[in-house]
Structure formats: structure tokens, C-alpha cells
Amino acid sequence: MLGGGLHPVRAPTPVLRRSAYAPLMPWDLDVVVTDESQLVRGLVIEAVEAAAELMLRDAVSARWDQLSALEGMTVGALCAHLVRAAGATLAYLDRTDRNARPDGVLLTPITYFHAAIDSPIHERIKEVSNAEATAGPVELAAKTAQIAASMRDRFAEEPADRLVAALGGLMLRLDDFCRTRLIEVLLHLDDLATSVELPCPATSAAGRTIVIDVLIGIARMRHGDWEVLHALAREERRRVDVFPVF
Image (tube, rainbow, N blue to C red; front, side, top):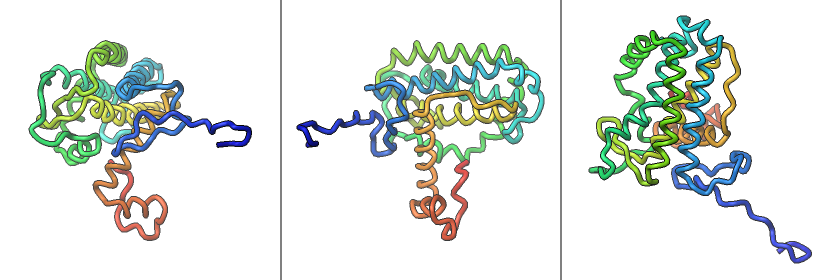
């Protein structure tokens, strides 16, 4: 108890406090959110909407066929890949029976990316993205905006325990798959902005908090806690390249 009989004011318990995720900082939330699914799904929608708006900038169309900041992709191919990465959420929802249950342990965002990092599909992704870039910026921007609108409608219908099948049928929670999409969309949003020499569009800090937390989790899984700690704070004792994660 404080002097004068006043009790200390306690901040609301962060809604993302789970064993696998760091709590959000007080400055991460612009509004009070009491529902974890609402927060995570809303952050994905926000990021996809920001991508749609960026694709319509003149700087993007002017450099459409030039190399992007992402190795092996033009600016147009990067946009096409961003569209596909965002749309995967709806595609997996459509493919997965609402009543489906996993045969084994559910994937987490960390184990999803750990499994995906060494996948041979990455070269194929570049080929498909280059082909789909021929649609042009206006069409891809419109498709991205439609994905965001469809997400808003679809997410409102899906329960918090909804599962999706990914990576050869392995399952994870829809909200955890949304976390993987946050990583894809936000990082590629920054890639695109960098490619055309524009500032990265403003998005909620809460989304970046989730991305940082999952990336640190991937590094811990791949290299162990001490190597991550050494990379962060004791460089002279680091024995492996921990960062970048991918």
C-alpha cells in the first residue's frame, strides 16, 4: 500500500503471455485488447493492408522489373511473393476441415519455421513469384487488398481453437499460423520499402514484438540459449553465427 491509503495501479496483464511468447510491453498496445485471437488476427490484417497500399506507390511500379532487396527476386516478384504469403492463410483455412484434429503434437510458429527453413521449395517460390509478377502492381495490389478484406470477414467466423494444416499436413492453431504470416508480411513489407527507397509503412509495434519473439525462439531452438545470449551480449564467446536467423 502507498502513502495516503492508495493502492499501486497495476497494468493489465498482457494478453499474449504464454510460455512460448514474451509479454507485450505497455507501449506496444495502442488500445486495450482483451482477446488474443482478435489481436493477432487484426495485426495480420493491418500488415496486409499496408502492403496493398505500398504496392500502389509510383516508386514500386517504376522499379517493377528491377532487382529487389531480396536476393533472386525483382520488385515485382517480391510483391507477388508477398501476395502468396498473405493468401496462404485463407488457402489453408479452406483446405482444412473445421473438425480436423492432429495426429501428433501441434506445430508452433517456432517449429513451423524451423522445419521450413531447410525446405527445398525456396527456389520454386522464386520461379512462381517471377511468373506471377507479370500481373503488374495494380492487379497485385488489388488482390492483396481483397485478401485483407476476406481475412477480416473470415477471421470473425473462426473460433480461437481453429486449426489449419500446413507443411505436409502438420497442423497448428490458426492464430499461430497468423504469427508466421506476421513474420512473412512484415519482413517482406520492409524488403519492398527498402527496394524502392521508401520508409517502411507504419504498423503496430505489437506485431513487431511477436516477430522478434518468434525469431529469437527459432535461434534458441537452432543454437541453444547460451549461443543466443553470447550473440546478444558476449560476442567474444560466440562460436556460431546465430543471426540472421534466416
